[in-house]
Image (tube, rainbow, N blue to C red; front, top):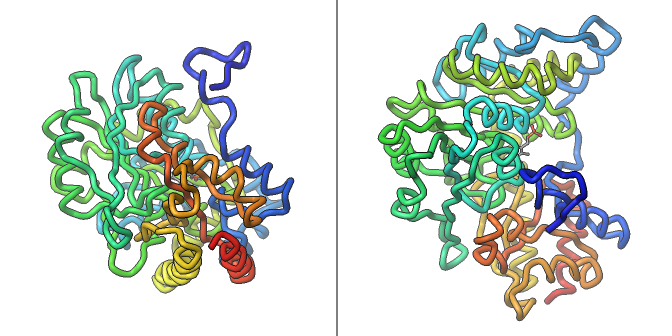
Length: 395
Ligand SMILES: *Cc1c(COP(=O)(O)O)cnc(C)c1O
C-alpha cells in the first residue's frame, strides 16, 4: 500500500500500479509486453486520414461541450445500427475524454458520499478509483472462473443480491468484460435488470469491447432490455474499436436527464478534448458493417494463437469470448500459485510481461484471483509469434 505524504485519504492505496511496474520491467529486460492492452498495429486509414486532414483547420479549437454534432449524430446512428436502440443526438449523446472520463463523470454526477456501487470483480482498474474519488463505496461481487477452461465465468445471483443494500445507488456493468473476456448472456442481463428495477438502481454499462466479440458469443446492451432504457447509461469509446487507444474519444448515451447530469460533471473535468479527432471517429463509426465484423474475426485469430501458445506451455487458459485478453492459471508452472511472483519472474524466465489478475480485485478478495494472470493478444503476427516461441521456455 502506497502512502504518499500529501495524498488525500480517499486516494490512499491508488498510488503506484502494477501496470507501471510491469511496463518498466518490460523495458528494462527487453521483454515483449503482453501486459497493457493496446494494439501495436494502426487503425483504419479512413479514420487516420480524416484526423490528419482536420489538423490545421478550425477543428483544432474547442469543439462544442457535448461534442461536435457530426460525431454525436454518428454515435446515435451507430448505436441504432448495431444495438437497435435510438438516442437523440441533441441531448442523449455526450462525447467524453475516453470511456474513462464518461465513467468517472457519471460516478461524480450520481453518487452522494457513502452511496454504494455494485459491480463485478475482477474489475477494470479505473472503477475502484473512480468510485473512491466520488466518495462512493464499491460493493464487488465475484465472477467465478469455470472449473475447466471450456466453461464460462459465472456469478452467484444470491451473492449479487447480498451486495445490494439500502445505500446502493448504481450498478456498474462491464460487458464484454475486461479482464475475463466474458460476454454477459441475455439471461444474465435479465437477472441484472430485474435487480436494478426492484432496487431502483441506475445502471452504468461500459461496453468499450462491443465489437471485439468472437464466434459463439453475442453482445447485447442491458439498455435494450424491457424497462432498462430509462435507467441506463451506456459508455463506449473509439480506442478499442479503431486501434487508437491514445486518442481518448469516448461517449455516453442515455435518457436526456441522466446525460445532462453527467455533462454537469464532465464540463468541469476536461470540458472538451480531441477536436480534430472527433470528425475522424465520426467517419469510423460510419464505416460499413464488414469493418466491424472484420476486426472481431482478426482478433479471434490472434486469441487462438495466444491461447494455443499458453496451452502448449502448460498453462490452462480460460478461453475469452471477447476483448483483448486471455486469462491463464499459473499453478502448473508456479507451484506456490502466486500470479504476482510469476509475473515478476516471467521477464527473466521467458522474456515476456503479463499482469497478475489479483490487481483487478478488491484487496479483501485478491485471493480469488491470486493464481490467475492476464495476457493481451492484440499484437501483430511477428510479436505474437515471438511471444508464443518464448512461452515454450516455460514448458
Ligand atoms: C480500455 C478500457 C477503458 C478505457 O477506455 P478509454 O476510451 O481509453 O478511456 C474503459 N473500460 C474498459 C473496460 C477498458 O478495457
